[in-house]
Image (cartoon, rainbow, N blue to C red; front, side, top):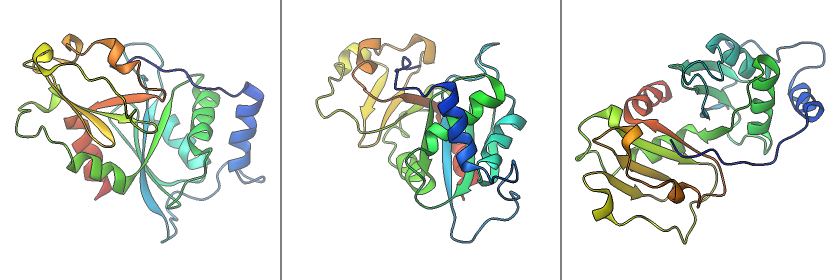
Length: 215
């Protein structure tokens, strides 16, 4: 998995304020998740590095509740690797990811980077995967989602140094086929250190499960 990238963090007091701001002052839950305004659209949240082994355990029921308490609707989790599909305004608030991070930390004690991706954009990123004809095993084919823009001057490893592994830099994501498995990737860690924003990867099987909930 790409190395964790640091970014600015709020204090615990600031985190609590972010969570409180999103809640109704008279209730811990803004709306019942069954009441979803017709103007709302689907989004995807990708949490980085949770439920890996015994570290950073986040129960899915608590994760769901965090999103509901922030006022989101029809919240559904996918597997236990930190994938959430939910409904919210077409344009989320600039601090929406920070609010989710704060809510998760408040509820579970776990600090995790959160990437929020509009459902249509997530689908477009998946549709742009150029490695589908090469990747024959969804568990060894990965899409790395970037929180921000991909560096224009990104230095990409020589394909001959990676073969039979394949790496493709797309407009909005990094696509990989790793026939030897994720843990034996030939892509050096220095490649991922070029990104200023957090990057999180999902295998193709997981991407398809998320796509199914976006339909």
